[in-house]
Length: 124
Image (cartoon, rainbow, N blue to C red):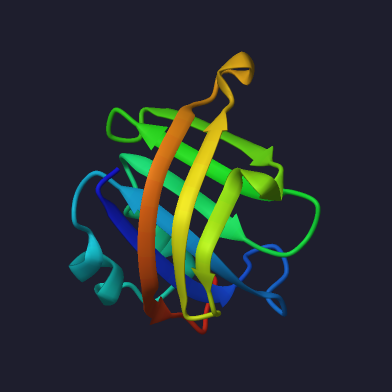
């Protein structure tokens, strides 16, 4: 995971809720995200990587895709797995570290830094 992007926009299940999503990928997809008109379009660009919903609450939602999206896994994490050194709403930096292999998921240890690349008005 070499590239980190932060996007912001409405949640697909509750369009009144605005959330931030951290996208971690192995390749640069920034131009493709900029071309997107919806949050779901940007998420669809992650065929090799990890998406984490940065929301307040008891759990963080994540989704992983590998092998060009042929293998996928989603789950929830304790918020403590994300140690942010900066989180001011428009920028986040820190470390994400978790092991979800017991549930068939990934083991992740990644340092990242991302500033909001794009804000969306539409979920889908």
